Amino acid sequence: MGYYINQEEAEFTIPKENFSRCLDAIKSLMSQANKMTGGSWTGGVQTDQWFSWVNTERVLSAETLVDAFAAWRWDASLDKDGNIGDIFFRGEKAGSDDYLMNAIAPFVKCGSYIQMRGEEGEMWRWTFKGGKMIEKNAKIVWE
Image (cartoon, rainbow, N blue to C red; front, side):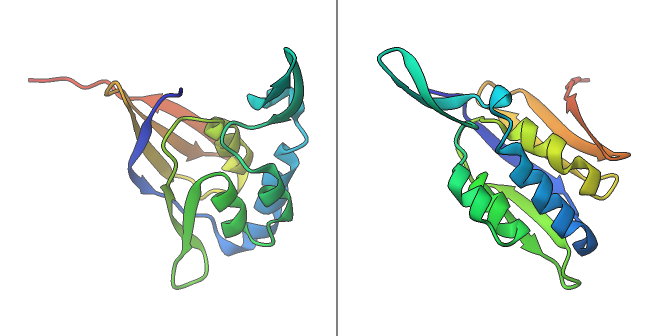
C-alpha cells in the first residue's frame, strides 16, 4: 500500500562547498526516531523504526552526498563545476521525503525547487528559500 508520486521537473542546486554539512544533516536525521514513519512489528509491538522507504544503513555508511541521496531514493548528479546540479526521484511511493527536504534546505541554492505530482493529480513543489523548505501546492485555473 502507499501513495504513488512522480517528479515532473526540478531546478535544483547544492553548491559543492555545502556537501559535507549537507551529508552530516542527512545522517543526523537517522537518529530522530520520533519522526520515523516506517518500521517492523512483532506481536503488535514495534521492534524497529526507519523513515518510510529509506535504507538507514546505506544512509549512515554513505561516503558522499550523492550516495546519501540514493539511499533516500533520489538520484543526484553533478554539474561541470562539481555542484549537485540536478536531482531525480526514482522511487514510486510517497515516503518521508519532506523530512529530507527540510534537513537539506539550509544547503540548497535559494530559488531551487522540485515539482511533484501525486496519483490523484495534485501537484506541489518543494521550494527552497532563505535556508528553508516551503511546500507549495498548485492551483490550476482553466480560462
